[in-house]
Length: 528
Image (cartoon, rainbow, N blue to C red; front, side, top):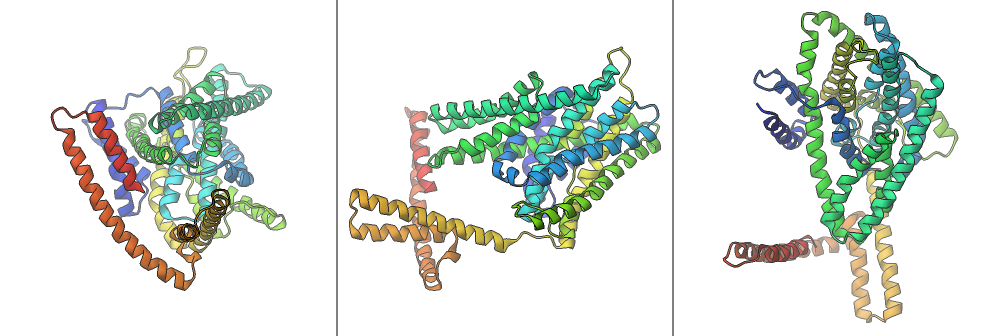
C-alpha cells in the first residue's frame, strides 16, 4: 500500500469513526488509534515515512486553533488556578517522577535523556481529552478543566523537553540559562501571538468574502507556530494567543455567512486532522515492534513502569490539589470550574490520555549528540513513549465511558437550561430596546410596532421555550406548527427552484459562474 493510499484510508477512517463512535459510545480518536494499530499489523501496509520534525508543525497548529474556537479567554482567566496546577505544576511533577523511575530502571540512560522522556509523556493530549469529554456529556466545568489543561500543558512540556534534549546533546546544563530560555520563549510567543492576531483581524476586515476570510484563518495558526519557533519562542503558546485574540476580537456579530462557513470548514478540518493524527499514533506500532524484537519482557516492563508512574502521579496530585482548590474556593469568591465530588475527580484523573504531542516529540529525538555518538537509549525511549500513549489512550479511552456511567457523572442540564433562558431573555430585551429606538427615530406605525414586539418575544421563546408563560407556550406551540408547515411549503418551493437552476447548469451556453451565484442566493434563502 502506497503512502497516498494509506493517507486516504486514514482520512476515510476519520470520517467513518465519528458516527461509529457515537453508535458504540466510544471516542472517535480511540477508534482511529485502533485502526492504526490494525493497519500496522498488516504486512502489506508500509511504514509511515513522515519526518518527525514535521509532525508537530503540520498537525498541532490547526488542532489547537480549532480547540480554542470552542472556548474563550475569559474562561481561561477565570480558571487560571486549576489550569496552573494541572498544565504547569503537574507537568513538572510528572516529568520529575518519570525521570527518576527511568533513570533507575533503564540501564545507562543519562539524567537529561530521562528528563526528556518525562517531559514528552507528561502532557495529556488536548484533542483526545476534549473529544472524549464532549462526547460523554460530562459537566461543563470538567470539560473546561480538561480543555484548559490540554491546551496549555504542551507549552510547559515542549519547553522542558527542548531544555532536556539540548542538555543531553551538548552534555552541559545551566539552570539559569534554562530559566531564561523559558521566560524568553513565553515573551516571544505572547508578543508574536498578539501581533499576528491583531494583523489577521485587520486583514479580515479588508477581505469582503467569507471564503477568503476562512482561508486566512487556516494560514494564521501555521504562520504563528512557524514564526514563533524561528524566533526561539513557544509555537504552541503563540498559536493559543493568536487564536484567543481572534476569538475575542475578530467576531462581527452581523457577519452570519462567514461565521457559518468558518464553523463548517473548521468542523470538517478538525475531524480529518484529528483522525489522521491518531491513526498515525497506531501506525507507529511498526517501529515499536522493531525496537522490542527479542526482548519483549524487558521493554514491556520499562513501558509498564513509566505508564504506571504517569497514571499514579496524576491521581496523587489531583486528590490534594482538588481539596486545596475547594478550600480556597469556599473561603473566597472565586468563579472557577473545579470538580465538586470525588467522582468528578476520578473522571478527571482517568481522562489524562496522552496522544499526538508525546509520539511526535519522541520521534523528534535527534539521532546523534554533538560529539557524533548515538543519542543514548533513543529506541528504548521511543518504545516507552509509545507504550504510555497506548496504555493511556486505548485503555483509558475505551474504559472512560464505562467509568462515567458507573460513577454517574452527568452534565447539569438544569443549570444549562437556566443559563440558556437567561440568554434568551437578554436577546429578546435587546431586540425590544432596539425596536423602541427605531420607533422613536423613524416613527413606526403602531400596528407594525406591536407585530415586531411579538416577534421579539418569539425570538427569545424559540431559543428557550421556558421563558414564556403556559398560555403563551401553548399559543407559541400552535404558531410553531403553522410556521413549520409554512417552512415546509417554502422549502418545497425552494427545492424546485434549486432543481431548475441546477438543470440549467448543464444546458448549452449556460455560464456556470452565474448559475452558481443564483444557486448560492437560493441556498442562503433556505437558511433563513
